[in-house]
Length: 176
Ligand SMILES: C[S@@+](CC[C@H](N)C(=O)[O-])C[C@H]1O[C@@H](n2cnc3c(N)ncnc32)[C@H](O)[C@@H]1O
Image (cartoon, rainbow, N blue to C red):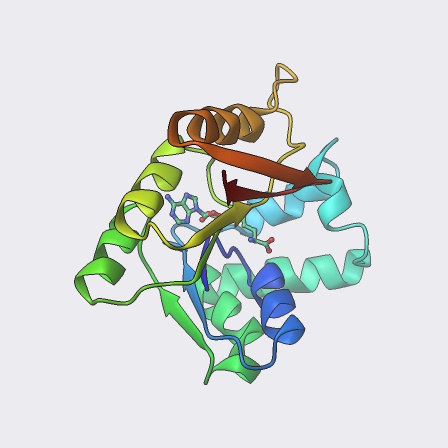
């Protein structure tokens, strides 16, 4: 499996726990420093749900670790128990997909949880036509209330002859 957009590894851990023999390539540039962003999540109208399970103290601890060590070391530390099955790839999509293709690494499944660009789907399908394509953010609204990922996925599915199955935030494409 390839996951595009790993952030601090929360969903990666979920996949690796769900399937004990899963090998996961985690793609993310892990650029910049997310300390301030994570700090602001608790008071943000839509992002707060992502941190509501954390106490203020735990959130402060994570922000402190991000400030001290940076995104990539914190993400890797969160995934250290899976180091024999998690392969970080510190690149952006679609460059990361080209890189995997050059290395002849063919994923069975590509999960997209990045910045909602149709190019990720197009290149993933072009390079790996047999891979299952799926992802997150089906119900994510932008500032205008538009469900951006739905538009991207529906448009791609229409162009390429896929059917979309969606449940809550998740979506998966099925061949017609
Ligand atoms: C919503 S977060 C991912 C959350 C993560 N999947 C989880 O559920 O725990 C989005 C991530 O996408 C990454 N990202 C943005 N554009 C990307 C791209 N073109 N290729 C790979 N990752 C990207 C960002 O760095 C960020 O970590």
